[in-house]
Image (cartoon, rainbow, N blue to C red; front, side, top):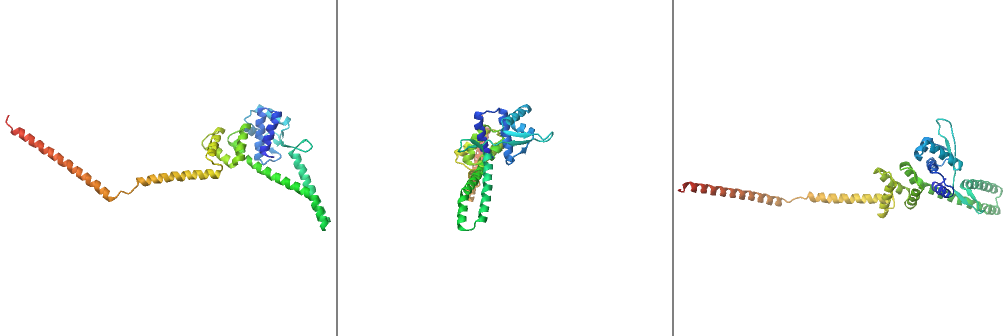
Length: 304
């Protein structure tokens, strides 16, 4: 299963056959858990976890699970008390074939596996029975279309696997922020396609460190980086390192100015000026005192 394709197929189906909000939340939660489990065919998860991650009450959870089961989105079976039930997700991805009918990717995969088995068997049998040049040419002509089909299938599988790696950011958001809505899913996938999972996850981590558990803050971080021309984690780290080096350079330059060495002759001149100023002040005090004494003496000697 492919996370992105399943989500797109789910909302394409919602346009024709809508589900309740509780059923949509539960389907997203089950898809997320199945993705973390490695897309195994059948997995177990407790009802408590599903209700917690999906934000559902007990009654809403039971109604949503019944709705998904009746509509053919999931299968589940109980294992008794105190044991988590088994769940199985049904793929919603479909392709349009030449006959004008839709068939599921699961059916297509089974058909490809049968073709691979037939091709390998026929190739081995023909190679063992025919050893001359003409037989080799005949084997090549008969197996070429099948080999080409197998190579095409391998290429599609590799591409599908590469697309599947683009789900890390969505899973990270659901683990740390909560349920992702269809609108937010489209914006997340747009960022993932343009910049990659690691870059988007880094923006989410910055928001978590600042205690901002909302998508608006993540959007603000992403828009700020994009405006600065930053498009990867490597570019972000280089930019931050450059800013730190520039700041350290300014601090060092300012500190160097404050610790500049003062020449000895300058200090000596300052000392002399201070001494001369003190001497001048003392002389002025002496002159004033002398004049005061003379005035007092003359006042005493002068007859009334």
